[in-house]
Length: 176
Image (tube, rainbow, N blue to C red):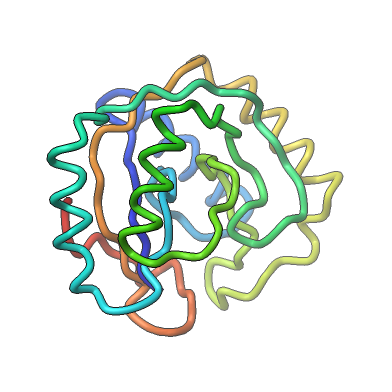
């Protein structure tokens, strides 16, 4: 599983990382780096050279995205508590163009995750983190997030290192 991410910059990255780590520790879930997933890379990684060339010439980075809401819902373990961001024309153009370049499937709504419902040790989904609990966690996160906009400036390629998604093994394998 390989994806292209946009990472927040500076103090915003540090603040989001602190919140992600606190929530993961409190609920014994996995930690991960704050990011907005641009798209997956479903095939040959050779397409990343074309993606990097596009990013360099497009002039769209850094992108500033507006926070629409902080949501908690049982959607997938990887989208449980997250910041919904406005799909601005610039962000939409950036994501759609990279999707075309790498041959990714249809994009999901743009967001920045704050909590995954994966058990820290087993990586199994946590059914005890139900809709009511996720909604309460989202409300706490919303109170903790003072930013109304986020600046996303670093495009990177993240790899899970295998076919099974194990967030503990995720690593950035390339900057774009």
